[in-house]
Image (cartoon, rainbow, N blue to C red; front, side, top):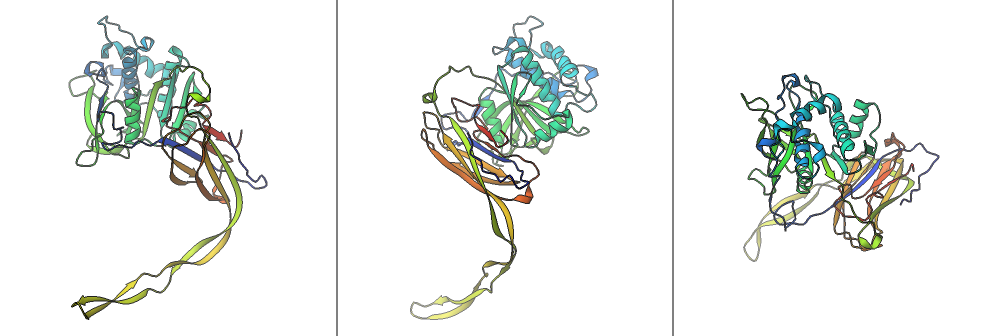
Length: 423
């Protein structure tokens, strides 16, 4: 659904992205009030954590294939047996079982370099290819890294498609703690990439646990499957405990590092087909109008306003005063006329049930605006916010409007959340 009015006699291009995510109201933290503060993938235990130097030929940077094998091993224990095999016949998947899988993933699927590791795009491609070969159209991949599409283009030499090897792929903004919590609580496999020394590529960790109660330092306890071995324990990874900030910074290896990328792999639910009365269905539309506005380029302050105030009062008379001056108003000293595009974005619930409260962002021409969309009744439409952008600020001829990009609202149709002017 879209309604876009863009002047065609101008060279106008920009990207406008609207992301609406579910707004959780809680007294205890980012998780809902009914959830326990601590969540752990208990069966991702020490026996499953493969070390990134299990084979000497792997070098020091085999974390991408190792974490992938760990996550596939966990999934194999939870209903997806094609992803990893119990080679030793113990009845469960252990590090020794997934070692040959990590070798295969690194060599054949991810192009891992023993001297530098695995690039984020090649890691994603390897995950998608391996999953797609074993379970086509059964999983989706979510990538949380704002600049990932550009990185993918630079590494692979082509744009990132919506589907890789029969696995749906969606890209979101940079990860925060609430993203890690949401994906892990959903039982999804999580790859967390952090910058590392001596390599331009990330070091990867397998998401395992969280506690959404803040520490005294304002962070959140987390732990991970860490493929980096302890000394004198080659081939054996470890489980490490640390903390993550609300904004997505991780205390790792003695330093605070940003979570550069978070990848979540989740099985697709097999839902019965139904009509719009089965649930909400968010759609997004936009309307843009070209205008000429007066833009201030230089400001000045008016003269300060001073007044006498009493500082000493005996009940009847003021015996002491002082002068108090307030800063002058900020007014425009010089302005210019500028051609701008004013875009009004709307969100509509075309389904049969209320959507619940949502938060989101409006991003246009490098500018960002946060907003809240109140619960939408069936058929109700609400303005999500306006953005005014100068026509000289665009380089691409694109206009994209997207709702519910974190998939927090359970919709009857997740395929119609994006409207693109080029369509």
